[in-house]
Amino acid sequence: MKTRFLWSVIGLVLLAAVPVVLSQGLVNAAIPMLIAALFACAYNLLCGQAGMLSFGHSAYFGVGAFSTIHAMNALGGAGLLPTPLMPLAGAAGGLIFGAAAGWFATQRTGTYFAMITLAIAELIHALAPHLKGVFGGEAGLSSMRMPAWGFTFGTTNEVYYLTLVWVALCLALLYLITRTPLGRLALGVRENSHRLSFLGYEVHRINVLIFAISGMFSGVAGALQVVSNEAANYVVFDPSLSAAVVLNTYIGGVNVFLGPALGAALMTFFGYAVSDMTQSWLLYQGLLFVLVMMFMPTGLSGLAVLAASSAKRHGIRAVAPAAALYLAAFACLTAAIVFLTELLGRVFSQDYKALSQAAGSGELPSVLLFGWSWSPASPLTWVVPLALMVLGIACWRLASGSMRRHAAAGAALHTGAAGAAVQRRPA
Image (cartoon, rainbow, N blue to C red):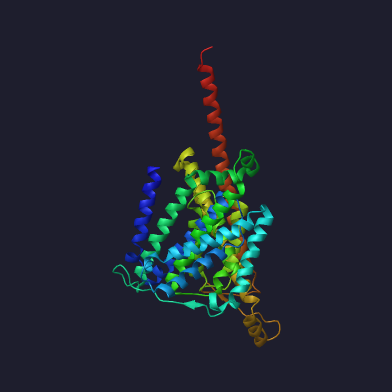
């Protein structure tokens, strides 16, 4: 417990130092990372803790966003809700709408529950552009952050610190909820709801409570986005946002509390950094999700836990070569996939077809990639990614073999120790 608290304090100090050590552009990019981290953790309370897979969580994010922007326009950042407390309006909107939608959605479980959540989100997304009085039509609504408590909230740093305070507070509350009897009951719902019902608990009421609380914190995330952007439109209800929070949560890992926050922060930064470099960044994001689900179903946080437990069990020196081989395999396979994706993307583009037609029949112009010219007709162009892929697979097999040997040696040592203990036991 003390170790977790110490790591939390260190993390907060590092996040507080971001505006001091990073440029304003990166600070501006860190704000959506924090919001995405909160949204993913709120979603994980429903999905990871209670085992209810929702495909429409953007609805509660969007309701929180529009609740906040209406509060900003109505109150003008004064009275009971000055600008720093505006996320409370989003929390109220997410809580009320989450309770109402959750009452209907949790009447069913499994696939039917997921379909109901998807239908509710699609309904709101379809209605929003037509309800101009509530959602502002296609143009949306806008507002302005007003000064309060001695802060102008006119700079990126002030908005960043306001977002950081709210995200840290909400994450702490979410963690405490997982430690309450309600959080334990949510685990019981996930593992065996029929047994919980047999013991006398009202499972539907528990499900609605968890759904509403998850919607409330999702509403806070939507409110923080509105406070940052000073505007909102019906795009906040887009199904892609619901898909993104599912992907981010599972990439980070649903079994560790901060796993979804890690996945959301990394994937948001990935989109920020890579979207300007290539048009195939969504393909890479989807490919990463598929690979994580195939080879690391516990997510990136689960991989970190596994690495830490392996180092503790076998020693850092023993597992270091295998870890280096895994990193080499990851680097080689990533380089091969990126090379092939970018090369094929350029070869099959309309610009390349026009260039090929201009060069003459049968002529395949070279493609400029990573500072080098690569001819699609040259065997070397295709040998390079193939060699990287073979090298990556070889490194992966060597690393896996090394870890299996360490596991077998550890099991033999444990068996020997247990046998010696039995022999020493007096008759």
